[in-house]
Image (cartoon, rainbow, N blue to C red; front, side):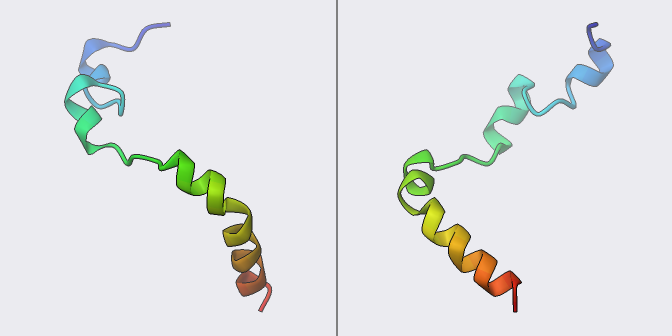
Length: 46
């Protein structure tokens, strides 16, 4: 089902919204994700 045109402009993938998206640094998370997850879990367990 397609969204009505009036709603499409509000979608994060609409052309005018692309520049406002948060960019994920895949390399950073591949290199550091496991260590950061362990640190977060230790913090959350306190």
